[in-house]
Length: 133
Image (spheres, rainbow, N blue to C red):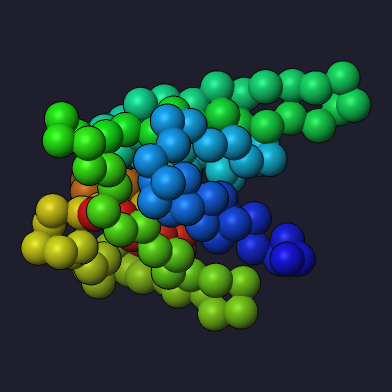
């Protein structure tokens, strides 16, 4: 698999790990990935993440996945919206609601990477990176 879409790759790793009931999953580190994870953490979709730096100059993000009391994953669905081949931009007025407000969109805005409700609060639109519910 080529790495033309590093964020999509991370989302797929999370999806696969949840399917296998793993407690954690790692992905190569990048600023964008870390910012998306920060939103997932503050919105309560993951337990947290840590950056692990290796001697060879590479670093990885270790993501701690979160499960409900019954053992079902907190993230039911995680979908890439904007892709390298097809970017999806929205104005603040047209930020979609994800499953009637039960889920969130993560946007990359001029004021940083944030959840849809924060973008509305800051009155900024941007690129919809992914949606989670």
